[in-house]
Image (cartoon, rainbow, N blue to C red; front, top):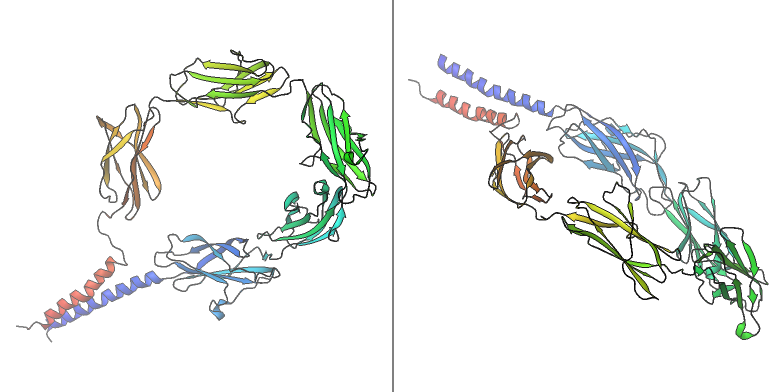
Length: 611
């Protein structure tokens, strides 16, 4: 072989060796792995008896090809900090695992959920030690990390509810009977409820953890002659809010009350208050009534007790009682309740539907409230009159009618005394009030207002839309939004490209703003558009984004009356401005060319016949 051939052989070997060395060097750089670090940031239990563990994972020496792939969760039913030796069992024995794909950041947060830690029996509560470990896609593992909180308790057991009173079913009860239950739970209690026939009558929220006996004074008069179902329900203070209840049935006995007519809540100051009632004992008709009394209080003073008049003279008037309360001064507040017992000592104290004493108020002879109807337009076009009207129906005379209004929500209400302009019939008088606002208010001004009426019996009527006030809004003449037509927009956008957006806008009023908005991966930017001529506006700007980023572009305009329009949204994927490569694609292609084409060329030269 001549010198020339030897040189070619040497060059060929160099060309073949160098690409392999370079390729292996790059490959080794890609797979250079470092162990991830992991920390447990939060451990909580769920209502479904699972443990939710939140962790933070950091991959030192992070690059795109090296990433955290798997997170394992290990649980042990122990207060001790038991760690599993993963080198021996090769990651087996975990309770749950979570797999990740390639990560965008070296440090990221993740959560992992355990399986359900209950078999449904409610008797498998346990303390769990929490341990986690993370692996990379190259099988590098983190340290085995235990939760610094020690252990988490999973409570699957409901509270225990045991009745103390009533101790037996169908116990006879009357008057105010104390329901007593002993309730315990390993996680303390969050709520205790008392029910009668499915209706909640009493609740105790977040009781003292030391409390185990819970009582409720059951006012049983509503269920006289019934056998109501009493239920006590308790929720524990675990994340699952375990519920348990216990029920029993009682028998309500004693006298029952029936009022012959409803007692008014408002009476004239010159009228007496009549009480007519029928008192019977349907459970024990053979037991005689012993006493029926009225208890009443004047203006919150001491309770006074007086006996009802027993009207019983024959079978037709059996159980009939009455009492007459003398007229009281104007403004007197009368509270009252009725008490009755039988000769067996069974009693009831009868009150209203909300278990409170009945209430009646003494007023002027005119105790009927006025009624009113408000008339107004909720919106008024700028420049037109703003008018409010009130029609009042009243049996006597309207002493005062005030209009209260404000122009700004932060202003105080101004008060105006209005004058009645029309009256009607004598027995059913109606009054008409009207007010015209003389000032011209700015566009979008909101006027809040309400009426207050007082009649000759000092009965007051407030018309304020249920406390929300009535509102009148001054609207602009132009209520039509601009019409935006985009006439120029690029078909594609490359990184760093200067683009121009052109629009035409149809609008009868003055435009206050025309802007183009663009977002890059959700981050919004805004550019004011420049008036060109006629109805045309334009704006040019550079989109600073990377290849593959998502870009959205749209135009917004509003006029002097703030009628706003938004154009259609154009969406783009940023394209590359020029070809680019990386060690994992362009360099590998160059190596492939070097490994195939150059050796073929050298071989061709070597095999060529020598002259």
